[in-house]
Image (cartoon, rainbow, N blue to C red; front, side, top):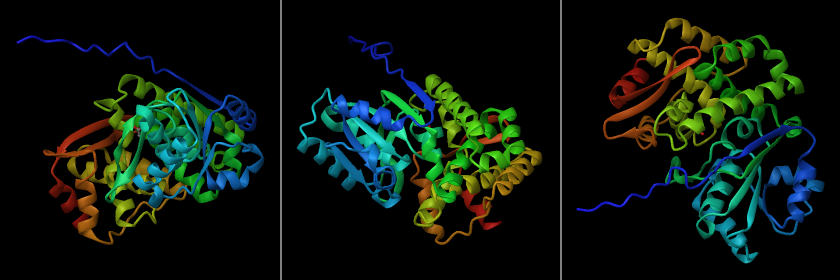
Length: 349
Ligand code: GLY
């Protein structure tokens, strides 16, 4: 037997920068237009910031969890094809998490992958989904279960976009912000507790710190574990239950709100199994309710709910994998959790 090694570890440098600032997106977009990029923009952003988008090669996308589908991918691929985009073309994706995930997936697959730039416009996409290279769509009722890892060439965060977010969409992102404190950084968690009013008021200075700190934490974990073989899975705190909540509610409960309830319920589950302290649960309850999140969830269809958990990417033959926070700031991954123990937990709530 002979072996040949394909040593890829250092072949491709996919490092990139995240630029964080305010009131500079228009300028960047115009520069990228002059460079001949192809644009995908969230319809809402186009309507709100029409003068930013004077581009010819532009696909306007109605971002909705129900549109995060292969049909949308085909539509955007068709746009690139019709516009004669080539292998050395570049896509610029402006919008929230759904737009970023769909657009990133298109860029990852068109001609086996073209460069792309993320310009996130929601808090959620600024602190989480635009960074780290997860791209994808929902398929056959399962969230994000078709996709690929593809890193953007650059992420430009312009916090001015946050001014026009609805309160609901803003809070949607705050849940992911709290998640970072809960799993990685107790001081940041305390900062969020102490500066709740400023965070909710979207105070620019506070936001500049919050967004930068979250991006730093995300960059660190992605650097260590780009393809989620280890510690990156910590970012899934709250997400196993959240994906079931989103599916069961037919996405009426938005991702961040589902993550908020998921973080509380997963911690409660962990306390009952002896994997987290009751004080942690109290901390989680206090911060989430102070920020205005509902931490309970009434299951509509149990079969749909538990099937969503089983078909989640985080489940394997041996059971579920949960990212938990045994104590604030110290996340931990628990594997091989039998689904039945989760079913029993929800039945006894
Ligand atoms: N949103 C979780 C991750 O990027 O890994």
